[in-house]
Amino acid sequence: KGKITYKMGTGRDIIQNNEPVTPWWESDKWWKEFEMIMPDIRYIYFTGGEPLLVPAMGQCLDKLIEGGHAKHIELRYDTNLSVINKKIIDRWKPFKKLWLQVSVDETEERYELIRNPGKYSNFIENLKTLKREGVEIDHLTSCIGIASPYSMKRVMELADYFQTNTYFRFLEGPGWLNVKYLPKNAKREMIRTLTIMKLSAPNHHKNYYQTEINHLRNYMDSVDMRMVHKFVWVMDQLDDLRGLDWKKTLPDVYELLKN
Image (cartoon, rainbow, N blue to C red; front, side, top):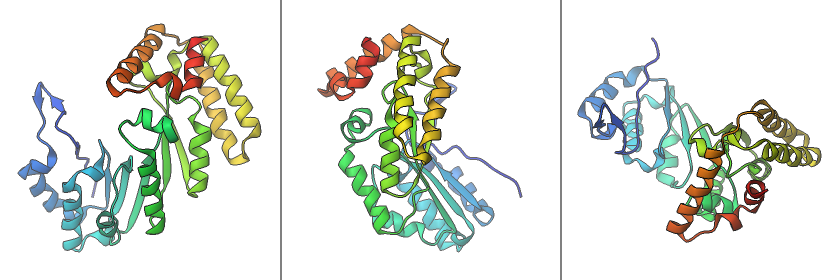
């Protein structure tokens, strides 16, 4: 009959017109409207924040299952997979189709720096849980930024291991993470490194490397050293708060910026 989009935030930090927005799960109006349109729903896209952390997400699914509507509805999620359990997985089973887009910007200790306080071992165990339960992962999605300029190789190897696909995006904001603001010599060094990676990569990985190379070439003249200095400042501040050392965890990034 048409497409209706609802913004369903997952936190209390949303502000519109200088007023905090009531979380959707605390809005009687939202639940009444949801129940009214349930028979016509064919597709729900949950994003975040982290949708799997919101108990009311499960309540939405319960209402659709109890009303006999689930078999007509496709579900799509953007999730960092920081949590998963059998109760969530069992709720998905009555639905027509499930699309899981799992975000991971890096691996191992790099993951734990970027996704602090997330633990990479927990993330991997959650991927294995999905595998054991027969839940298909549509994509591992990853954002390329100053903190993760060479993450493609590691993320694609992870995707191959779990027999799924990859989808990469270039971070546009915040600006201090945007690779387009790097100086020209840093971009040239990245292009050189990515070209070497591409030469030894499996054929189904090569196009991804070329896409990042093309992106850097397209923005070769878009330099803003204020953003680069802000990246260093923010990372140093986070290290002080967390007791970490980004220069040791991301040595290739540090060398790129230092040079």
